[in-house]
Amino acid sequence: MLRLGVNIDHVATVRNARGSAYPDPVRAAKLAEEAGADGITAHLREDRRHIEDADIDGLMEALTVPLNFEMAATDEMLAIALRHKPHAVCIVPEKREERTTEGGLEVAREENKLAHFIAPLREVGCRVSIFIAADQAQIEAANRIGAQVIELHTGAYCDFHAEGRFDERDAELARLTEMATFAHSLGLEVHAGHGLTYETVTPIAALPEVMELNIGHFLIGESIFLGLEPAIKEMRRIMDEARA
Image (cartoon, rainbow, N blue to C red; front, side, top):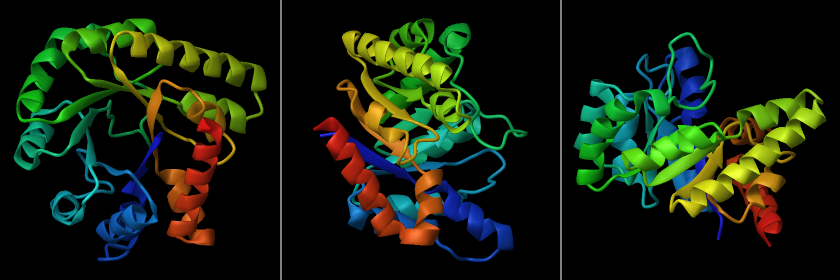
């Protein structure tokens, strides 16, 4: 079964826009869980622009499904992850000036540093995922440093689709398909995410090597019109049809 991880970061974005206590991302996570999400993703950024430390505390206490803790490879985030010991940790690139994560992590150039960084996470039982582009060198490096999972960045594929650049979209989908197969052949578990919508999810969900999709911004946006539970259930329906 293809798993669905729901990212609740942008519930916190709305909350922080007013500096209020609502909407509560922990409440959203529980609703997502009840709607059939297999896991919850939350990215604690260095600048705390959306998810805050107290949200991670609340999620760890409230959830019965796994938490996928997205984080940059910094000493501060490592200490937080080691304190909470979430089910999974996804290492992502992070720049303060970016609106959202703009690309995959550069693993090949930082191989030694990242190998030492993830070792203590594995020792305490966290599953370590690396968020990377569909690039063979990066996948090979992720495998060498001891990551158990890679998450393929689907942002370029989704952007090309939205812009009507269908030849480039199809070429990026071919790369994602090839690299999902390659990563699986190395023994890595393959996840995918970033920018996926009802329109773009089917070809990614159909890839047999992909075991999990992590989707957030689109679902939180759709929940304004449909409600969170119906938005998630519709995504689940499309994913299940694609995999079947």
